[in-house]
Image 1 (cartoon, one colour):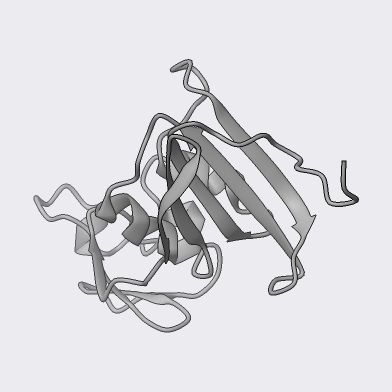
Image 2 (cartoon, rainbow, N blue to C red):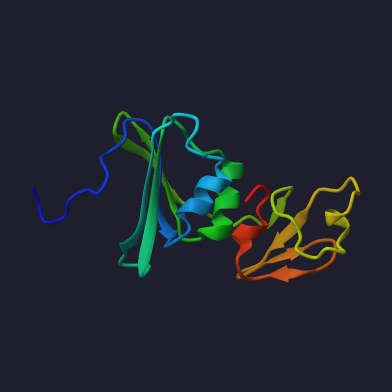
Length: 153
């Protein structure tokens, strides 16, 4: 075996999310609602050396291809991630995530006085900025720990 050994074996079918910012893999699992109770094989590698990032995480999910909506949300916490779709052990599609202009119904506003946090029938609505998100209702800007705003996170 070469000096570069695989830490986790290849998957037959599914999705490999690579170049996740180091330490964000567990938040990725939360976004994808992967709890470990469904019996689906999932591999998680955290804080491995990376040429582009100082460290990165990798998530391999067998038997599941991510939707565009899932990838949009994932881009908020892993803007450098790449999505690899695997079929019959081969990469059939590889792309970088792109940040959407807006996310609706995904995050909750940290401002307790925001209309979206009251009992009003409105969905949360955030504009995605280069380095932050801005609430469309109260203009609260969040730059750090966006993962904590993800509903059910």
